[in-house]
Length: 198
Image 1 (cartoon, rainbow, N blue to C red):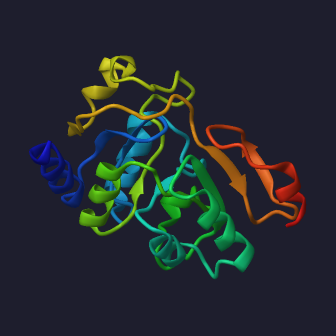
Image 2: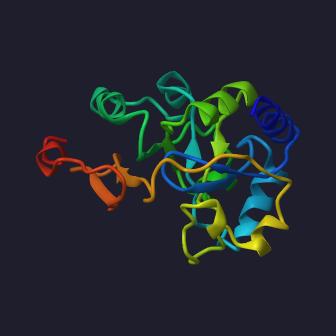
């Protein structure tokens, strides 16, 4: 297992693309500060470049570096639901988040996964990872290793060992809207009353 982690870390550090299990579904990604790697993930997934991709962070502290001036309310949401299956969309720190990651927009969706091995990988790589689901755009989202498309596997540099802990994509919430808006209902249920407060 240790060898699996160190290999994953080395490949990602060097700009490679890796498929990895998360606490929700299988993801495919790379370090978010390498334009070539980010473009490759878009190409591999056949995803339109104007559609931003979610990003995985290792801590609340790291999230605050990649978001731009997080409000207290948003920080409190992160504290309540992280680590876990909640992706939070907020204004991106334009100095740190490449336009390619943002799909040319001004926001970024961040999530801190509740999976120890993956958090370890992100910490050791030193920057957040791109973390969309490991499927071709609009195809079925894989929750088991056996569901990964063999054609997709041929296009990446490594598949991290392990299995997912969940079977549903993350919930996505947009905290730039007033009131906050749930863009996708997924693994985490947020109390609607909680949304009205913001």
